[in-house]
Image (cartoon, rainbow, N blue to C red; front, side, top):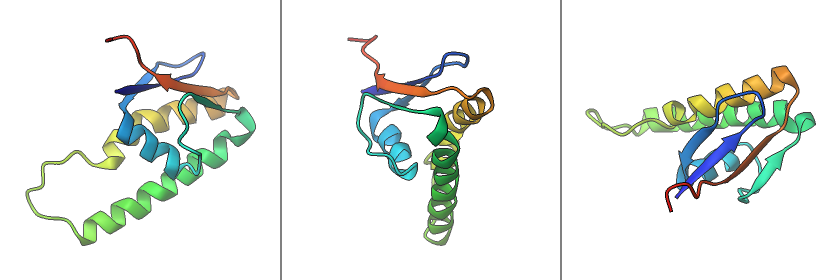
Length: 103
């Protein structure tokens, strides 16, 4: 199932549930869906996500297998990081929920 992250003035970001929940955990959030992140907590969540991704990347570099074609977590996180960065600049909140559009 997909999870959509929404902000009033930015494009919607859709992500597979397992990766979306991992991103939420890296942001030190509960992982609950649906939910929202208020503007006053946005910068801290973005910082946690970027720090968590750096730690994950460092750990994966030590244990990486050459020729691994898996898409990195950093690549998967990029659209969400852009959405969070936009929300911080515009002082907006974000919400996320399951995408039921394909049911």
